[in-house]
Length: 303
Image 1 (cartoon, rainbow, N blue to C red):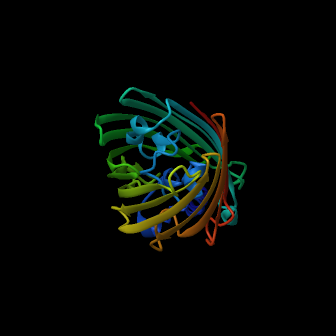
Image 2 (cartoon, rainbow, N blue to C red; image 1 turned 135 degrees about the vertical axis):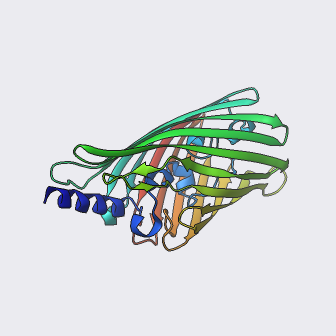
Protein backbone atom coordinates (compact mmCIF):
# COMPACT_ATOMS: atom_id res chain seq x y z
CA UNK A 1 0.00 0.00 0.00
CA UNK A 2 2.89 2.32 0.79
CA UNK A 3 4.38 1.79 -2.67
CA UNK A 4 1.04 2.51 -4.30
CA UNK A 5 0.81 5.78 -2.37
CA UNK A 6 4.26 6.80 -3.57
CA UNK A 7 3.35 6.06 -7.16
CA UNK A 8 0.22 8.20 -6.86
CA UNK A 9 2.21 11.08 -5.35
CA UNK A 10 4.82 10.93 -8.10
CA UNK A 11 2.11 10.96 -10.77
CA UNK A 12 0.35 13.93 -9.18
CA UNK A 13 3.52 15.94 -8.92
CA UNK A 14 4.54 15.14 -12.48
CA UNK A 15 1.23 16.54 -13.69
CA UNK A 16 1.66 19.64 -11.55
CA UNK A 17 5.12 20.39 -12.92
CA UNK A 18 3.81 20.17 -16.49
CA UNK A 19 5.90 17.14 -17.34
CA UNK A 20 3.03 15.00 -18.63
CA UNK A 21 5.50 12.13 -18.62
CA UNK A 22 2.96 9.53 -19.70
CA UNK A 23 2.77 11.27 -23.06
CA UNK A 24 6.12 13.01 -23.41
CA UNK A 25 8.44 10.67 -21.53
CA UNK A 26 10.28 13.73 -20.24
CA UNK A 27 11.13 14.78 -16.68
CA UNK A 28 12.54 17.82 -14.86
CA UNK A 29 10.49 20.03 -17.15
CA UNK A 30 10.46 22.80 -14.52
CA UNK A 31 13.85 23.75 -16.03
CA UNK A 32 11.93 25.18 -19.02
CA UNK A 33 9.85 27.60 -16.93
CA UNK A 34 10.83 31.17 -17.89
CA UNK A 35 12.47 32.72 -14.81
CA UNK A 36 13.32 36.11 -16.33
CA UNK A 37 10.30 38.40 -15.69
CA UNK A 38 11.16 40.43 -18.80
CA UNK A 39 11.12 37.35 -21.03
CA UNK A 40 8.06 35.99 -19.21
CA UNK A 41 6.21 39.14 -20.34
CA UNK A 42 7.23 38.22 -23.89
CA UNK A 43 5.87 34.65 -23.63
CA UNK A 44 9.40 33.28 -23.36
CA UNK A 45 10.82 35.10 -26.39
CA UNK A 46 14.18 36.86 -26.19
CA UNK A 47 16.96 34.27 -26.52
CA UNK A 48 18.51 36.52 -29.19
CA UNK A 49 17.96 39.82 -27.35
CA UNK A 50 20.71 41.63 -25.42
CA UNK A 51 18.16 43.74 -23.54
CA UNK A 52 18.67 41.69 -20.38
CA UNK A 53 21.71 39.54 -19.55
CA UNK A 54 21.18 38.82 -15.84
CA UNK A 55 19.38 35.54 -16.59
CA UNK A 56 21.84 34.44 -19.30
CA UNK A 57 22.79 31.30 -17.34
CA UNK A 58 19.21 30.07 -17.78
CA UNK A 59 19.10 30.57 -21.56
CA UNK A 60 22.01 32.01 -23.55
CA UNK A 61 25.36 33.24 -22.19
CA UNK A 62 26.63 34.03 -25.69
CA UNK A 63 24.80 37.39 -25.50
CA UNK A 64 26.79 38.75 -22.54
CA UNK A 65 29.87 40.06 -24.44
CA UNK A 66 27.53 42.01 -26.78
CA UNK A 67 25.79 43.88 -23.97
CA UNK A 68 26.35 47.60 -23.36
CA UNK A 69 26.50 46.84 -19.63
CA UNK A 70 29.45 45.54 -17.64
CA UNK A 71 27.27 43.80 -15.07
CA UNK A 72 23.61 42.89 -14.68
CA UNK A 73 22.16 41.44 -11.45
CA UNK A 74 18.60 40.42 -10.63
CA UNK A 75 16.36 38.80 -8.03
CA UNK A 76 12.83 37.62 -8.70
CA UNK A 77 9.69 36.00 -7.33
CA UNK A 78 7.16 33.85 -9.20
CA UNK A 79 3.66 32.73 -8.33
CA UNK A 80 3.35 29.80 -10.68
CA UNK A 81 0.36 27.83 -12.05
CA UNK A 82 -2.32 28.54 -9.42
CA UNK A 83 -4.83 26.33 -11.23
CA UNK A 84 -2.62 23.32 -10.41
CA UNK A 85 -2.24 24.21 -6.76
CA UNK A 86 0.33 27.01 -7.11
CA UNK A 87 4.04 27.18 -6.42
CA UNK A 88 6.25 29.92 -5.05
CA UNK A 89 9.68 30.43 -6.57
CA UNK A 90 12.55 32.76 -5.81
CA UNK A 91 15.57 33.25 -8.04
CA UNK A 92 18.89 35.05 -8.09
CA UNK A 93 20.91 35.66 -11.25
CA UNK A 94 23.72 37.77 -12.60
CA UNK A 95 26.11 38.29 -15.49
CA UNK A 96 29.47 40.05 -15.76
CA UNK A 97 31.40 41.11 -18.86
CA UNK A 98 35.19 41.28 -19.02
CA UNK A 99 36.21 42.52 -22.45
CA UNK A 100 35.07 39.90 -24.95
CA UNK A 101 34.27 37.37 -22.23
CA UNK A 102 31.02 36.95 -20.30
CA UNK A 103 30.30 35.00 -17.10
CA UNK A 104 26.92 34.20 -15.58
CA UNK A 105 25.42 32.54 -12.51
CA UNK A 106 21.84 31.77 -11.59
CA UNK A 107 19.71 29.70 -9.26
CA UNK A 108 16.09 29.09 -8.40
CA UNK A 109 14.26 27.45 -5.52
CA UNK A 110 10.61 26.54 -6.07
CA UNK A 111 8.24 25.05 -3.49
CA UNK A 112 4.73 23.82 -4.17
CA UNK A 113 1.92 25.06 -1.95
CA UNK A 114 0.32 21.62 -1.96
CA UNK A 115 1.08 19.57 1.14
CA UNK A 116 1.46 15.86 0.27
CA UNK A 117 1.21 13.92 3.54
CA UNK A 118 3.20 16.50 5.46
CA UNK A 119 5.72 17.15 2.70
CA UNK A 120 5.82 19.90 0.10
CA UNK A 121 7.53 19.01 -3.19
CA UNK A 122 10.30 21.40 -4.20
CA UNK A 123 12.73 21.99 -7.05
CA UNK A 124 16.24 23.42 -7.11
CA UNK A 125 18.24 24.62 -10.09
CA UNK A 126 21.78 26.01 -10.02
CA UNK A 127 23.67 27.00 -13.16
CA UNK A 128 26.65 28.86 -14.56
CA UNK A 129 27.53 30.09 -18.03
CA UNK A 130 30.40 31.28 -20.18
CA UNK A 131 30.26 33.39 -23.34
CA UNK A 132 32.94 34.64 -25.73
CA UNK A 133 32.87 37.17 -28.57
CA UNK A 134 34.85 35.35 -31.26
CA UNK A 135 34.31 37.92 -34.03
CA UNK A 136 32.66 41.36 -34.03
CA UNK A 137 29.47 39.68 -35.24
CA UNK A 138 29.79 36.20 -33.68
CA UNK A 139 29.60 34.91 -30.13
CA UNK A 140 29.55 31.43 -28.61
CA UNK A 141 28.24 30.41 -25.21
CA UNK A 142 27.69 27.40 -22.99
CA UNK A 143 25.67 26.91 -19.81
CA UNK A 144 25.86 24.07 -17.29
CA UNK A 145 23.28 23.35 -14.60
CA UNK A 146 22.38 20.97 -11.83
CA UNK A 147 18.72 20.33 -11.07
CA UNK A 148 16.96 18.44 -8.30
CA UNK A 149 13.31 17.59 -7.84
CA UNK A 150 12.20 16.51 -4.36
CA UNK A 151 8.97 14.62 -4.98
CA UNK A 152 8.18 13.38 -1.47
CA UNK A 153 9.89 12.59 1.81
CA UNK A 154 12.95 10.44 1.17
CA UNK A 155 12.75 10.50 -2.63
CA UNK A 156 14.21 12.90 -5.18
CA UNK A 157 15.47 12.87 -8.74
CA UNK A 158 18.27 14.95 -10.17
CA UNK A 159 20.26 15.55 -13.32
CA UNK A 160 22.74 17.73 -15.17
CA UNK A 161 22.10 19.78 -18.29
CA UNK A 162 24.01 21.84 -20.85
CA UNK A 163 23.13 24.62 -23.31
CA UNK A 164 25.30 25.38 -26.34
CA UNK A 165 24.47 28.55 -28.28
CA UNK A 166 25.81 30.67 -31.12
CA UNK A 167 24.93 34.38 -31.33
CA UNK A 168 25.05 36.45 -34.51
CA UNK A 169 24.85 40.23 -34.99
CA UNK A 170 25.09 40.65 -38.79
CA UNK A 171 23.78 44.24 -38.95
CA UNK A 172 22.88 46.88 -36.39
CA UNK A 173 19.55 46.14 -34.73
CA UNK A 174 19.32 42.51 -35.89
CA UNK A 175 20.50 39.64 -33.66
CA UNK A 176 20.14 35.89 -34.12
CA UNK A 177 20.66 32.81 -31.97
CA UNK A 178 20.89 29.11 -32.79
CA UNK A 179 21.79 26.15 -30.60
CA UNK A 180 20.66 23.32 -28.39
CA UNK A 181 19.16 23.80 -24.92
CA UNK A 182 19.08 21.41 -21.99
CA UNK A 183 21.20 18.56 -23.28
CA UNK A 184 20.77 16.51 -20.13
CA UNK A 185 21.47 13.23 -18.43
CA UNK A 186 18.64 10.72 -18.25
CA UNK A 187 16.84 10.52 -14.92
CA UNK A 188 15.84 7.26 -13.25
CA UNK A 189 12.66 6.81 -11.24
CA UNK A 190 12.28 4.61 -8.17
CA UNK A 191 11.64 1.60 -10.42
CA UNK A 192 14.85 2.14 -12.38
CA UNK A 193 13.18 3.45 -15.54
CA UNK A 194 15.20 6.18 -17.29
CA UNK A 195 13.58 9.29 -18.78
CA UNK A 196 15.15 12.15 -20.77
CA UNK A 197 15.06 15.84 -19.96
CA UNK A 198 13.30 18.30 -22.32
CA UNK A 199 16.13 18.93 -24.80
CA UNK A 200 15.32 21.35 -27.63
CA UNK A 201 16.83 22.83 -30.76
CA UNK A 202 16.62 26.63 -30.49
CA UNK A 203 16.35 29.25 -33.23
CA UNK A 204 15.69 32.88 -32.28
CA UNK A 205 15.75 36.38 -33.78
CA UNK A 206 15.38 39.90 -32.41
CA UNK A 207 15.15 43.24 -34.19
CA UNK A 208 15.52 46.57 -32.37
CA UNK A 209 14.09 49.62 -34.11
CA UNK A 210 14.24 53.27 -33.06
CA UNK A 211 11.13 55.06 -34.28
CA UNK A 212 12.76 58.00 -36.03
CA UNK A 213 16.08 59.82 -35.77
CA UNK A 214 16.56 61.12 -32.24
CA UNK A 215 13.29 59.56 -31.11
CA UNK A 216 12.79 58.42 -27.54
CA UNK A 217 10.47 55.68 -28.77
CA UNK A 218 11.71 52.23 -29.75
CA UNK A 219 10.35 48.75 -30.28
CA UNK A 220 12.00 45.34 -30.29
CA UNK A 221 10.48 42.37 -32.11
CA UNK A 222 11.43 38.89 -30.87
CA UNK A 223 10.74 35.44 -32.29
CA UNK A 224 11.88 32.17 -30.68
CA UNK A 225 11.32 28.58 -31.70
CA UNK A 226 12.03 25.46 -29.65
CA UNK A 227 11.72 22.00 -31.15
CA UNK A 228 11.80 19.38 -28.37
CA UNK A 229 13.72 16.37 -29.59
CA UNK A 230 12.44 13.73 -27.17
CA UNK A 231 8.74 14.58 -27.16
CA UNK A 232 8.73 15.75 -30.80
CA UNK A 233 6.79 18.86 -29.83
CA UNK A 234 7.24 22.43 -31.00
CA UNK A 235 6.81 25.85 -29.38
CA UNK A 236 6.99 29.29 -31.01
CA UNK A 237 7.08 32.50 -28.96
CA UNK A 238 6.45 35.93 -30.46
CA UNK A 239 7.16 39.01 -28.35
CA UNK A 240 7.05 42.79 -28.73
CA UNK A 241 8.61 45.30 -26.34
CA UNK A 242 7.95 49.04 -26.54
CA UNK A 243 10.31 51.36 -24.69
CA UNK A 244 10.18 55.06 -23.96
CA UNK A 245 13.56 56.70 -23.46
CA UNK A 246 14.83 53.36 -22.07
CA UNK A 247 12.93 54.23 -18.89
CA UNK A 248 9.46 52.74 -19.30
CA UNK A 249 8.65 49.44 -21.02
CA UNK A 250 5.49 47.67 -22.14
CA UNK A 251 5.54 44.07 -23.35
CA UNK A 252 3.22 41.55 -24.93
CA UNK A 253 3.85 38.04 -26.17
CA UNK A 254 2.13 34.90 -27.31
CA UNK A 255 3.38 31.33 -27.28
CA UNK A 256 2.01 28.73 -29.67
CA UNK A 257 2.90 25.25 -28.47
CA UNK A 258 2.07 21.68 -29.35
CA UNK A 259 -0.56 20.12 -27.13
CA UNK A 260 1.94 18.15 -25.04
CA UNK A 261 4.79 20.68 -25.01
CA UNK A 262 6.54 21.20 -21.68
CA UNK A 263 5.51 24.88 -21.66
CA UNK A 264 1.96 25.40 -22.99
CA UNK A 265 0.40 28.03 -25.24
CA UNK A 266 -0.46 31.30 -23.51
CA UNK A 267 -0.66 35.08 -23.75
CA UNK A 268 1.67 37.20 -21.64
CA UNK A 269 1.72 40.86 -20.63
CA UNK A 270 4.52 42.78 -18.99
CA UNK A 271 5.61 46.18 -17.70
CA UNK A 272 8.97 47.54 -16.67
CA UNK A 273 10.63 50.68 -15.39
CA UNK A 274 14.33 51.53 -15.22
CA UNK A 275 16.17 54.46 -13.67
CA UNK A 276 19.82 55.05 -12.69
CA UNK A 277 20.63 51.40 -13.32
CA UNK A 278 17.81 50.04 -11.14
CA UNK A 279 14.83 48.32 -12.71
CA UNK A 280 11.53 46.67 -11.86
CA UNK A 281 9.81 44.16 -14.14
CA UNK A 282 6.39 42.51 -13.81
CA UNK A 283 4.74 39.90 -16.01
CA UNK A 284 1.35 38.20 -16.08
CA UNK A 285 0.36 35.05 -17.97
CA UNK A 286 -3.17 34.33 -19.19
CA UNK A 287 -5.24 32.38 -21.75
CA UNK A 288 -4.01 29.05 -20.44
CA UNK A 289 -5.87 26.61 -18.20
CA UNK A 290 -2.56 25.25 -16.95
CA UNK A 291 -0.40 28.30 -16.22
CA UNK A 292 -2.94 31.13 -16.47
CA UNK A 293 -2.74 33.79 -13.72
CA UNK A 294 0.94 33.10 -13.11
CA UNK A 295 2.86 36.22 -12.06
CA UNK A 296 6.56 37.11 -12.01
CA UNK A 297 8.18 40.12 -10.36
CA UNK A 298 11.84 41.05 -10.56
CA UNK A 299 14.24 43.68 -9.25
CA UNK A 300 17.59 44.34 -10.85
CA UNK A 301 20.61 46.57 -11.12
CA UNK A 302 23.02 47.01 -14.03
CA UNK A 303 26.01 49.19 -14.77
